Amino acid sequence: MARERRGFIMVQVWAAVTYTDRAAQSQKITEQAMSGKTKHRLTDAEKHKRKLKTAKRIIRETIIELKRAGASDCKGSISTRILARVGHTDDQGRRRDIVRVAESLTQDQRDFRRP
Image (cartoon, rainbow, N blue to C red):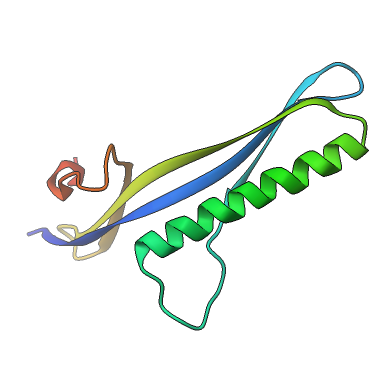
């Protein structure tokens, strides 16, 4: 018989820069922003704040590098994706994880049970 385990929510923050290169081709660069290492445990809100700050820094530094390389029309944007991860034990006793995109931080974990 399958057993349910507790799940958790992960918030990913992505920095994206769109620009036009020297050959007049539209290009896009995306990079995931991380909260970084620290000696102290951070709350989820503090981690999210650090990720947003890191994403802004990534955009700023990328645009500076691209302009030095001759790119034009540089625009940066930040996108956030919320993932829910729920684990369970299948009928054979093996642990399985299900990762799905969540619509909100409070979405019910029962929505992510195995098919």
